[in-house]
Every structure is written in structure tokens, then in C-alpha cells.
Image (cartoon, rainbow, N blue to C red):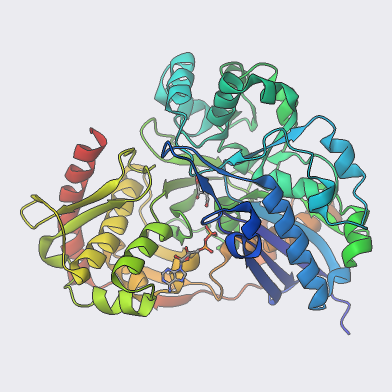
Length: 531
Ligand code: ADP
Ligand code: XUL
């Protein structure tokens, strides 16, 4: 039996909880995942969330995330994962979601007893039973107020890295303070999903890391400190409820004895600060070279790249501190209508089969003979279009009611990635090489469209789960920094990682077809955004 040290990454995402265990050469030793809807049906979520009747509010119960951790760790011991060899754990959480710990929760965390599931021990620890998550778009009023208080959208972006966005945690906090002040008062600590899961492992409130904190509209993203002006414009006495900020490679504590006694972890196992799913994916995909761009197709579709000189925009896109390089940043755009919107059309036209979906796609030619579509099941983030609906345009740009199945599927996919290219360009991201990840990155037909729309070859990693893999790599990075008592460059850690595989090559004629469609997509989106 080897006694080599292992490193664990957890990813508490929108739809499920995943775990990846790697060795020091970053080879995956074990992995597992559970889906919230299937494993914890008693919480009544769909796609991991509760959608409220207003069409804007979207929440998830934090106790479900706790229950998922109970189940996943129990499965690890049942499958004999070598948990006693885990030297460090880090993790990833869907960004922006907040967890509202009630006064007294800190004692419950510290006093976790291994005789019971965590879910029972923490059942009474939340001031808010249903947490706002990133899909929520109900805080337009609070966003307007923040921009007014700070001197406009560009001023908010210059300070925090993004203009005010509905899902960003500060605006969600402002809404709770204004509409449910008793809940705000009863709250001792507001965590992000990432720092929340870290708290469960460390048995104490965990600090928020700089990268995920940049998704709150509350931090000075260059100074990496809470911005007093933004805090004051959000809610009273907020800093005390947010706690400290740390760099993502920081050791925040050792694993709580609960996990040692119940699941067999070693008592010296470090907990490294958790971060958001997109920052973790950036780490897992080791994006460092200029022009290396990741497209993550999970519940949301995101596009991001590492950057040295950030130029935050008052119109769109986000800048976060880079989670593995204290001197760098990451630029990102996020589309809400990603995998779930593809699933809606797959279920309607292809009886739930991705193979059938891909076969129908091939019935329509590249460029779709000029037909285009914008499909919004949810209010969109990029571009900001709050009115949901399916918008179809014929080759002359005239709106039409429906398309043949093949044309419909092609219009959906081409529209999603044309839009992504358009907005990536607007925040100064120009891909030379695309690395694809997330659930939909296993689909070769989707990857071919991505390659042709962007005119870049598309690469994939061995596994589509870059967030939990990235978290495992960050666990190794954080532990190495702590052991050596200095910041070790992340590239040194990642030297052992397997190279990417080319999965789709760009075809220049098709790329030209897509380039010629961009202006029409821009026009159509602007018309919808203007209402
Ligand atoms: P998240 O991390 O946001 O929970 P994942 O990265 O796990 O999401 O991606 C889940 C999504 O992957 C599902 O919603 C599903 O639509 C999509 N997916 C899985 N397999 C395929 C496929 N073959 N083609 C397209 N999409 C797929
Ligand atoms: C990013 C965003 C989503 C979530 C869930 O800003 O809102 O990508 O992180 O994946």
C-alpha cells in the first residue's frame, strides 16, 4: 500500500456535488459525484434550485448542500477511498450564492459530533433556509441604487471589477436587508457557497477568498480588501458579518475531528481556502499563455482567460483576481442560458437524446442558410435581456414563429456561441486556443461549432470536471506553499499535468461564414435588450 500523499477537490455546483482525488503527479486516483435532485429529492429542487413564481427569484436550500456532503463522504468510505492519505482539501462553489449563518452556528460547527449526520447537527443553523443563488435576477432595484451611490456603472466596475449585477452577492444582501431586516439582524456570518463548504470541513467560519469575493460587488478588486463605500451602500454593519478575506492558496485550518472520527481522515489534513467554480476551472485548465481561453459549458456557459492588465467595463464582463497568481487577474463573461436551455430543446425535439440532437443538427448546413435564433428560458446575463422567450430570425432578419427541428437546434447552438464570441471581443478576450470544459464539453458536435465560431482549435482535458480537478490542484498548491513557507509558482505544481488533447480543428471557410453573421446577431440582441 502506497503512503503517497493525496489531495482532494470538492465542487459544490448548481446541480450537484463532485469530488476528485489526485496524487502529487496530479493523476486522478478516485472521483465521484452526486446530483442534488436525485440524491436529495426531499428538498424538491429542479436542476438544484427552486424557481419562484416571479420568474426572477432563484434559491437553493443550504441544508441540501450539507446533506450532499454527508452522502458523498459516506460513499467515499464505503468505496474505501484512502482518506487517511489526504494531505489537503480545497474546493469550489457555484459563484455569488450566499449562506446566512444564524447567531450560534459557530458553536454548532465547532461542536460537530461524529455520532450523527451533519445535516441533523446543523439543521437549525441558518437564518435563511433558502439561499439566493447565481441564477437569481431579482435585484435590479438594488443594482441601480449601488450604481447611483458609487457614481455610475463604470465607477462600480473600476472599484469592484464588474458593474452592478443582479446575482452579485452584495445586491442580494441589500435586498434581504431591505425586505427581511429581521433575517439580516439574526445573521452572524454571511458566507459564499465556497467559504460555506470550507466552514463545514474546518468546523469554523471560513474566510472568503479574493477571487470569489470579486463576485460580490463589495471588494476593491485591485487592493483585495472590502471597499467601505460599497459596504456602506449595501447594508449596515456589513463588514463584521462578512469576516476576513484571504488569498486562495491560504491554509485556513485543519480538518475538524468529525471527519477524522467519522470518515477516517488524518487529523493533520489541511483545509485550503475554497473559491468559485470559474476561478477553480481557470486553475484546473492552467490558463496562463496569452490567447489561452476556456469555455466552460456547465449549467451556465462561461468564457474566461487569465490577464495581466485588467480593464473593467461598465457595460459587461467581470474581472476577478487570479486564484493562483497574486499578480494576475481573470476576465470572464457568463451566459445563464447554457446547458439547461440546450436540454429544453433536446427534450422537445430529440426525445432527451444527445445523439439524436447531434444527428438533427447535421440536417442543417453550417451557417443555417442565414437562419438565426436567441433562446432564453431564463432572464439572460450576457447580454442583459430580462424578457424570456425564443426569438427566431430568417435569412432576411425577419422574425419567424418556428423552424424545422434541424434548423432549430443549429440556430440554438450557433446563436449561443456567436453571442459568446461577440461579447468576449467586447471585453478584450481574443482566443488563439480554446480549452473546453463542463458537462457539454463531451459533445463533439458542440465543440466543432465552438472551433468554427471562434476560428480556434478546441482542446479538452481528460475529464470534463475542471472545477473539482482545479480545486484538487489548488489543494496541492496551498499545501506546498504552507510546507515551504513561501509562495510557490502554480506552474511549478502543474508541471506534471497531462497535456490537453485537440478535440476539434477550426475550418476557415466555416469560420468566415460565422464572422459574417456576427453583426446580425449583435443587432438582434441589441433590439431585444432595448425591450
Ligand atoms: P454544473 O457544474 O454547473 O452543475 P456540469 O458541468 O456538471 O454542470 O454540466 C452539466 C450539464 O452537462 C447538464 O445540464 C447537461 O445538459 C450537460 N451535458 C452532459 N452531457 C452532454 C452531452 N453529451 N451533450 C451536451 N450536453 C451535455
Ligand atoms: C459566474 C456565474 C456562474 C456560476 C455557476 O459569474 O454566475 O458561472 O458560478 O456556475
